[in-house]
Length: 330
Length: 241
Ligand SMILES: Nc1ncnc2c1ncn2[C@@H]1O[C@H](COP(=O)(O)OP(=O)(O)O)[C@@H](O)[C@H]1O
Ligand SMILES: [Mg+2]
Image 1 (cartoon, each protein chain N blue to C red):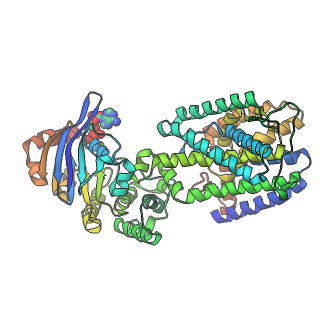
Image 2 (tube, rainbow over the protein chains, first blue to last red):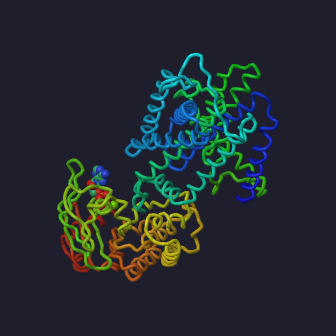
Image 3 (cartoon, rainbow over the protein chains, first blue to last red):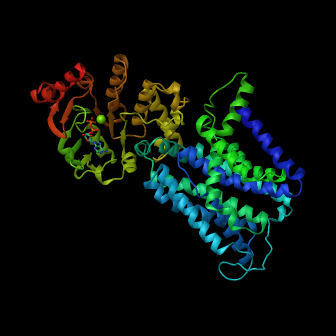
């Protein structure tokens, strides 16, 4: 049963990667690309939340760091895009490790507040310094500059680049799934149960919490780097602390137990405001809609929209309604 | 041998353990006392979840107090909890693997070890079951398997018979009695169930208000008037309540 629905999802995902870039017109390719990059960050926050029960409100801020590093390296050196992206991922992974330090002592609301403070700090730096655009100096910001952003050789066009980004998202999901199936996943499940349970099984809680935040940071940084590659220029407004909070809320709405929950979250985050705009509706209305969706998720759909979809798919294939999504995993 | 020397723990003004010392030589030893006597606290100090203000726990010549908690597990300490701590979103097999993950040894050795532990505890048939789907007894059996996996040297059970039927308690007692032959580990059992302690523990330490009331062969200890006053007296009161 689970393998049937997994196969269906895999085919669906593959079809999407092949078809979406080919058929999406103009601006939509860019919107889907940025949606994909935000899905990476959402996947990181979602796995931290469902696997360890920890709230990270700094994911979009870390995307900003990933984007900053990618731009900075692009303009300063002649490395290929992949190298810049990897360095960006490494930097945000390290930042994730740093943010984990308070996580070792705090939990719940206090930990969430600490990550929010990190996000606010990044917000201030981004607003004050802006993002490198090819000018001289460490911050690399000039008023009239717009230096070229190199992309991978095989992903020069916007459509090809969207495919490339989607491939990274798949790699991100695979990375999370591999972790879940191996020693770190088991250690995390015990930490989520209780620290005492983890310690009593010989889990080095410090190491594995740090590792989890590192992985989450890595995904955010890669997402940010990929966004930089798509747009060529980044704006501080994209990485406000409030955006991190919004993304986390949508991770809950989308459903963090399932990998496609991250995709739903990112679609809500990126596509819905664009759609409303297209229809001539004030995009701020999306805030109201998301607020209502969050209330719904918190009160009656703990596994989010993805959980409800998963339940419907399972009901469809087993011929009976399954109220709970037992055994299904992200 | 398990030696506790001078163990002292304070919570603010409360002295939860007051210079407790005992040398356990039996393969299965007991630790009893009324509610709040300091039994779980003793176990938490040995696990490293609490820092003792004073004292040592020396097992086979190793001073456990010097190791961080997870290293004590790598060394060979195992424990169960009063409220069991099986991870809900892992299968029984994964709950067991979570311990061998952090130990040395080849994959094949770990698998054989896991199968041996599961077979001993009688959980082979439920290895694929999720933690959240286990009933009370299955949880307890999984706990036993967790405790005997990975070549343990010392195993502690905190009220393992809590919530079990008399038949289940009997079966659990048999299992605990078999642990030493299987693994060579020394076992320390905390329980309220005096009958269980009497049946499986050769030596017993009795605590009351963090003080050592008696220590020695279980039958002697249970006949001690001080023990009957401290422990059994309260048990009777509870039954009337
Ligand atoms: N973490 C803690 N903080 C403060 N007091 C505690 C803590 N843990 C236990 N105590 C106190 O220490 C005493 C012994 O508790 P405990 O070891 O749990 O008793 P028991 O013998 O029933 O297992 C009790 O008075 C209890 O209230
Ligand atoms: Mg207790």
